[in-house]
Length: 180
Length: 413
Image (tube, rainbow over all chains, first blue to last red):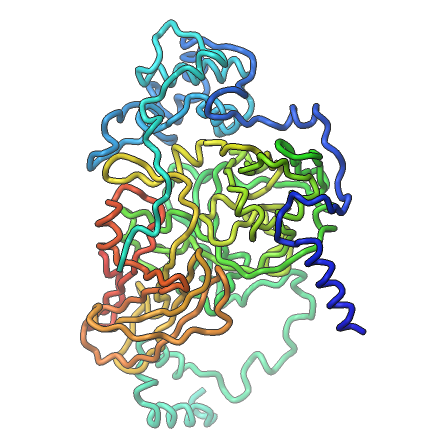
């Protein structure tokens, strides 16, 4: 009896395709539908092409003010690093014996800079900056790296238009790559 | 203490088993023998502590030194890591309190009643799930290792102990629901290729998981070694991706965004990519390749000539450990170690090799071979291909140098 139950259960699981494709129609009817408003309130993901960047804008000049108030104590007044990581410089060093990985030298997409600053910075108060402030401080970090003029103003369109120096620097995983 | 007769058998044992006792002597055993308890020890002469005196049990006070390996003098401890004291543990399961930690925005204090998982993006039915909802799905338990991708960095190999070197690996039994089951509940659209997972920590930690892994062995986990996840391990809910680099198993999971593309988030571009000598960086380097380390004898321990069981752990993100070979002569010859059953998929495997040290200085090391035939490389072979600047995925053989006085030290240093 017990064995038969186990077999029946196993058969049910097989029919259900546990661990298999998730495109099937079988459901447990657990959970509740998420509303569009809930999704909009939770979803802060920005893609690399910037199509999901929000409305708003910020100038490099305002970014300097935000940076000095919110970022400089960890990253240094010119992004040279401190408690926080170095953000500036290093372009042309990646293939040398002393590579310096910064926003300017290594970070491949400007829109995901916005994504990271908005979701995780400043470290002591993440998600506290307005979208305008995030545009501004993203622009200021780009400016410190020589990637934006001092009078630039960034929004969804102009941030997505920035071509980062290391955009094409990433390659797929070739491992296993070491033979005995 | 010496006049009650109980130490005489101990002395006889010392005479009969001279070699073994001498080994113990170096480890402090001689002093322990002299201080051996009388036939009726103090702790037998009165009742012990009350039953239930510890509502949640802790180790003996004599084991108070077996703790996480916490780095000193960091600039900040919000985004940092602690290591498992591998050299102090037996078997393959890591006690939950000693499991390694790596956090990017500190450890959130989450009330599970107020925590939700949102599944959205390329799904037929965007869903909100409570923790109770998730526990209603069919559950599974699997024993798997978890390892930080930088364990250790290629330029951080001078640590003294096994923990200093590769303590960012631990192993536990994980219980939860297949991610595929939950995704099926939401209904994947045909163009779904990636699932972007986000944590409810102050880093809103974000990693993209390829759909193949999501539909294979990926889990949404709520329990670890039988109890609910610890806050340090993602309470009340985390992703668990067997064999993949640890940071992808996003803790404190709050959101799964099913998408056609990866997020290209900071953690899969600026971080957790592997910089090569030519200046390119490998991206989406998910799998943790085969690795092993001798945990006893290991760095900072001291041994005496005579018998020793060499033991350690091996693991591979590609499947099972097929063999572990051990050298006791600095790499001139290698012998197969015994593997302790069970040898599990993507779990730590304990290996052992009996060995008698002749007192001559030497170097011992282990290398793992997994069931794909992959052989754990030497540091020289690995860095010949990748250089020293890739930081992540250093799975090189770890040598331990044994000096004439029996002191065991890092063979790299």
